[in-house]
Amino acid sequence: MNTVVLLTVDSLRADRLTDKYFPECMQRFESDFTHFSNAYSHGVATPFAFPGILAGVPVQGDGTLPQNTETIADHCKGTAVALKNNMHLSAARGYDSGFDSFQQMPESGDIVDRLKDLGRQSNVLKSAYQTVTSLLDDDTVKPVTPPYATGNIITDGIKTFLDTYDPNLLWGHYMDTHFPFSPATLPHEIDIDATPQEINRANDAFAGRTASETQLDLIERLYDKSAQYLDRQLESVFSYLEVQELYDESLIIVVSDHGEAFGDDGLQSHPWSCDPADALIHTPLLVKYPEQEAGKKIDRVVGHNLVYEIIKAHFSGESDACQPGESYDAPVISKSNNVIRATTPSGIIFRRRDGSVNKQGSVSEAARQAARDAVFPEIPTSTGEIPGVSEDDRQEIEEQLEALGYK
Image (cartoon, rainbow, N blue to C red; front, side, top):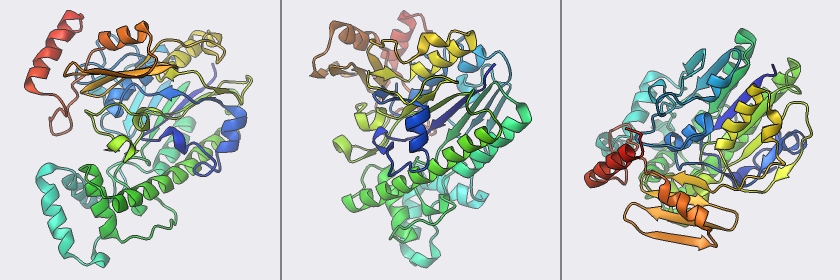
């Protein structure tokens, strides 16, 4: 059985898949991979998106997979291992189903820095943090160290897992293009003309969706450098697979769970209750089929559930079922806590909790019906807040889930 390598990336936009940001991988992507250029995430943030990627199902409720849902690992005939790197990708939500090893990667930085960073992201401590840092000289302030493993740690982990487990399925998750952004997270020199204090303030403003144009420009430059760093990490994995004589025969998939907004459509970051704008849900999806024709670009609209379908078909021995020549005509449903979007080749329809509906372009009745049938999720943050959902909304969603047989 050929090895399946799933490399997921947090917050990478589709428009960053160019030579500028991926100079080392781009030639390989163009010659070896099938590029689905109109691939759309099923949600605006990680817990909204991953049910589609790992299990081929829409997000519902608090993001927990429905009972008895099969993940990609449940279809694996051999050893399945995962290096998760985001606390939303938890066993509590059912993502560990079928995996023989399901490991959270260690974070970068020491424990003191991580506690500071977590404090900066809480509503209670953020203002205190800003007050303290504003009184310090720039030289005494360190750039924020995000509480996740940087790409070099994930890359080393992937190589170790390949050697240790000889897996039939390996899933690794990269977080480098996710907020907060800092030169301190990248183990290479980058040219960013900003003090640590300016970087920290820009991250704080970006998290609060209040960044100025100058701060947005700084955050976006850091994001772009993070993409270039990710490029080197992915190429390192591909080269290692070649050395191990696994590359040609492996099914390799690269996909980003969602994007990031830098003022696009008036949005900053990836708010959990906003309209699923293209900046947030149009992401890269690249598939290298084992020992088959490559270098194709597929422009038809597809959803990220295609990842699940391709892997499932591979393990069932029906790989031809998900080859790029097949037609994918179903509307792609993308969700936030407050808005459901149905995307088709000819148009888009948005349905909101308040009952309003608007569309762009020409939308078929099938797409309208798909938007009507889709269930709003209500996914809480780490503090228990559910962005965009009121008490009345929660009661409504409970009744809707029960009526659909989910409760």
